Length: 91
Image (cartoon, rainbow, N blue to C red; front, side, top):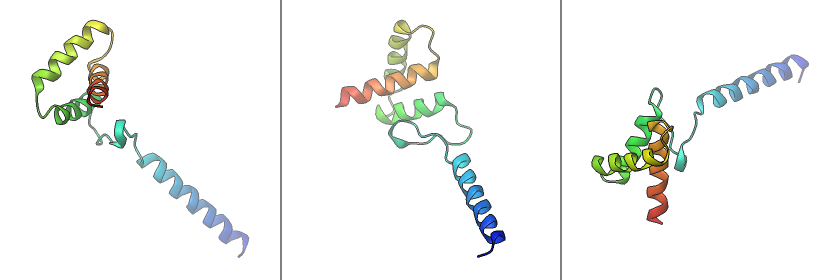
């Protein structure tokens, strides 16, 4: 192999690694990934609704209880805390 082929192969490998790194996305709890354009609040609400079998009232009561304990937290952070609480309680 000449030096040109080695350079080309190295450039292709770096390009491929860059594409994989940028398109990988961040995995949430449990390895689930947020869809492109989906807010963190929508992501956690969707997960909680699946966990509570669509019981939106239970989720809202949980958010209110968490808000009393963490008044400065955003709604997305409260939903995430509530999700982890539900998972912990199920074990």
